[in-house]
Image (cartoon, rainbow, N blue to C red; front, top):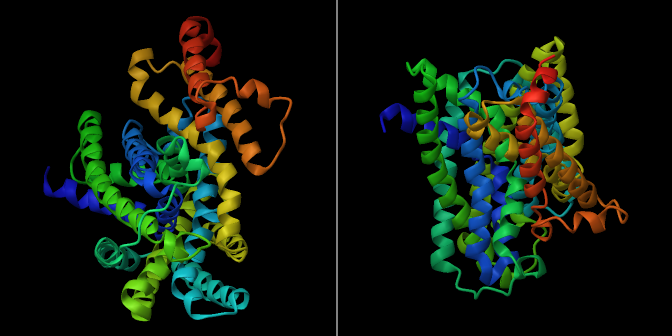
Length: 431
């Protein structure tokens, strides 16, 4: 691997290493207890492996994720890509970053959480909007220096966790007691990194193109190598902070992962540790939020021709309003959406890598995505609280359904049907 590959690999790590991702591994650690290592392996598959594959998948196309999804249908490409940007942007990703920043920097030192959250998010999003109006290299430089500092803080916290936290692991909760590996796999959806990678991928591809990599074969190889560098860093971070969660289980009760990390920092290093970690995470959340607002602004400007400034104003206000609902509310509403989106994204990514086997037939793409979407829509509606008692007995007959992977077999069947009838369907689909 050459120097450019390492540089781009670290850049990709910085893109993925949003502070919001810090809140899920500690919760997994507490819940999985003695089954932690199996659970974290499953989490890493979807939280690290899939994002790397997603970024690499973008190297197969010339523009962005919309072109990838257009292989199903242009309308699907527009709708699915828009949903992805809304999810990683104003609906979940940006509000989550702001509330994580608040919870790890302000909440440990205040008792009036409602008013302090309002004041914090008001100031936070005001500055985010101002910087997003004219994003410059200043934000990139902050990110370049900030990511290593944040990483060092996490390393210090992790080392402290291994050396200073000696509490025994608790018994796993119900959802981790039977199949911790597959439960961890589904929990990895919550990072949102696989769908974020569909937006970030073009940045990596363009970075390699700027360095003289032009052929698709070399682009795919270079992107995959950079992804492996990123993956090593993410696995280390997720594994370490998840272990902290596992060791904190007997030290109290916590509302979410941000609360766990703040409490761990205080337990090991006192108020100074809590304050330092909070400041660093807040700065990281700030640059992440700016990056996401700019990305949303550029995408929706391109597909709507609306003014960029008005779009980022709407994105900022929406993010601000949702952020004030609190972190736990954001997490609860994001789960059903991610349960619906993720299987579709996974199948789309895997089809991209295997398309040479079926000559990129649209019939295969459509068959696999259609049956995947039907199954994952059911899972999303159930996760949202809908009682679908009429359909449920039939869905429970699907293989792997109890593991949260009921969409796998329908995806395969849909793809096979499309492959068998590709000669009859493809002429129609091209019209």
